[in-house]
Image 1 (cartoon, rainbow, N blue to C red):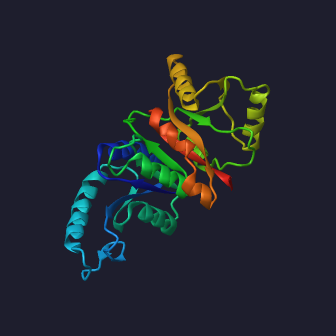
Image 2: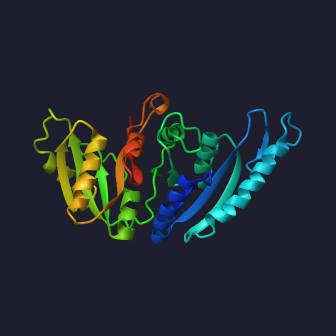
Image 3: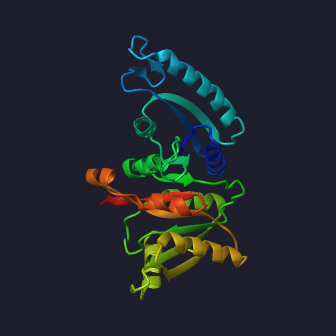
Amino acid sequence: MKVLLLTDYSELSAFMRNVADKIASKAGWDVHVLNVVEIPSELTKIDHETLDMKCASDPLIYIEKRNYSMERMEAFTSDMESNVTTHVHYGGILDTIEEFVRENNIELIAMGTVYSRGIKNFFNNTLLESIIKVIDVPMLSLKCNRDNAVFSDILLYCDFEYVNHYDFTLLNKIRNAFGSKLHLLHVSDPGGNDDGMIESMKTFAKSYNIEPDYIESIKANSKEEAVIKYVEEFEKSGKGSIELVAVQKRLRNEFGKYFLGSKAAKFVNKIERPILTVTSLKKF
C-alpha cells in the first residue's frame, strides 16, 4: 500500500510524520514524502524536478528553494522506520498533489493541518478541504501531537443507514495491524427519532463484515461535540484510549467537488485525534 505524506517541514508536519510512520511501519506500507516548491504560473516546468531556464521569471530563485528543500527533506525523514521515498516537485500545490496521487496510485494522503481561517501557511484549512473534496482517496489529518498513540481503540462515525456505500479496506488494515477495538457511534438531532438505530448499526456492521466492540447511539446538537464527549467519557472510564476517529467522506460529482463544503474537514477543527476519512463507493 502507498501512502503520500505531505510536508512543509513545520511542527505540524512532524506530528503527522510520526503518526503516519508508526502506522505505515506497523502495517508494512510504503511512504512517499512530498514537498511542493510553489512556482508562479508564468514559470514553465520541463518536468516535476526541472525548470525551463529561458522563462521570463528568474528560475534560479526556485532552484535554490528546491535545493534547500532537498536538504531539509533528508533531515525530516532520517529517523522514519517505514520504507520511505522522498520527492521535491515544482508546481502549484493542489495540482501537484493531485497529479502525484494519480501517477503513483496513492491510496492514502497524510498531512498535518491548521483548521483556522486567516492562517497563512502550507497546511491551512483551504488546502485540507480542497484535498478532501477533489481527490478521491482516504485522508489522514492531524492538528496536534499524538506521538504516544498506540491505536488500541478506533471510533467510526458515519451514516449507518447506507449499507454497501463505503470502503472500509483501509480502516480494517489499520485495525488489523494494531489489533484495535472498534467503536461505532451514531449521533442524531435532539428531536430526532433513533428508535431501532442500534439494530440498524448491527446490520450495517454485518453487511461489511466488521465486528465492533462497542455500539452507541446518542443525541446531540453538534456531531463534532458529541464525538469529543464520547471519546472523553470512554477514556475517563479507564477502558482505553480512542486514538483514531474515522468519518465518512462521500464521493462528489464535479459540481459537488468544487461547491459543496466538506463535513469531514470540520472534524479536524475540534477533535485532537488523527482523523481518517472513509470514502464512499457511490457519488452524490
